[in-house]
Length: 119
Figure 1: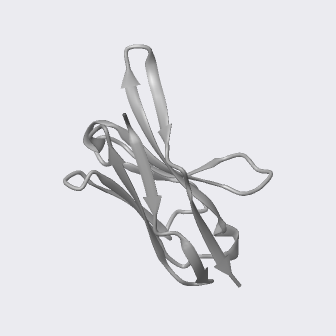
Figure 2 (figure 1 turned 90 degrees about the vertical axis):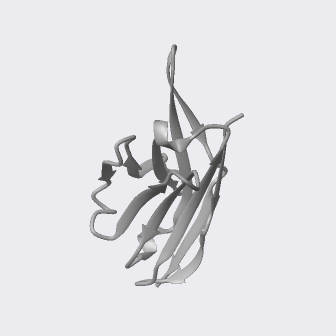
């Protein structure tokens, strides 16, 4: 059974940093696309960053230059380093694993971790 557990969220002042972690069990992350998403009340979940099997990273415009996604295959963990945080980064952050199956891609999600940035 695939499980994703996020950690590292919290309260931080604007300009500060946080590092989110997503520990995966039940599969190995090296063969799956991994991503970080975020959601605020009343809005759809949006992509923050994702990283391919070949470790190619893509970022939302709002994250470029401030956030870095990385993966540690030995620890089966994906990270999101967030620097120069802004109040508008406040959201619940979710980790996603995209698993390729014979029937097509299947998404697994973590339970989310709250990030709150105060002004």
